[in-house]
Length: 382
Image 1 (spheres, one colour):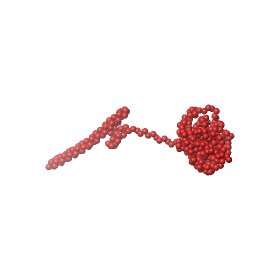
Image 2: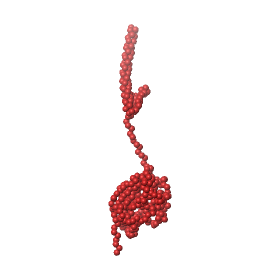
Image 3: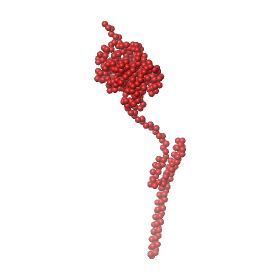
Image 4: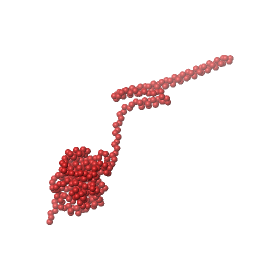
């Protein structure tokens, strides 16, 4: 009896173990096929990626590159394998050619380091425009120049009243272009040529220059210079100041001294704001003399003062010449100077009239030819 019970018990245990083994076998088969299917999908992606890489590289004209995946790393998931594969496949998207934005230029120094100081000025050697042009290769059409390495505070228009002074102009350009470039000035040169042989009117031509220069560029500083005056020191900086500037304070023809306290002739400079405040220059000074004194009066009557450089720096040489025809001294100039207070509001840039004939840009300057009319008939002395 006991043996029979023991045999049945062992039979049941064997059947249980057999069922457990069968269950274990089924579970193992399920897991095996699941992992196999995952790996088969992985290898399919791997082969497609490798073949695509080969095709892309060959199509781009490059060599063959083979990428191998390490599938034996511990603690690695399927997603990490696929991510690694994507990273290894080179991107065939073109790289964007983005040029870095240029750094802003620093402000130009108040005292440029390239200045020479006292200059030797002479007019004995022959001068040609071809020579001047070769000396100034960085000056662009119209007589324009901008410093390449710094940002100037002012944009300067240099305005010259002109008629029949071609030889003087060559010397002026020969000396002034190098000076202005060393001074780190952003500038343009404008020759205002009065056509015809009627009486010369310097101040009216300067008003024309102011008006026409602003059509060419947004200038905020204006230097008015006679064509026969050359600075003898490049530290005499041609830009604008807090007050209207008189540059030519010590000419050789005056023994390098200021002829009188109110003298404002030769070379002067005003900002756009200062120029408009005095209504520009008078238009009714026909012939030589008086207009610079009228301008001085306009400045002082509008609450401004004239600033000047040191007398050792503001020295000028004048190109000697005979007085121009049709530029005789104006006999009415003294009466006009005494009436500046009454005339400056109605006679100036606000009342300017002229006829523009031609604007032509040369390599070293811009020539502006105009007709400005004739002087009114003088009153008959009774």
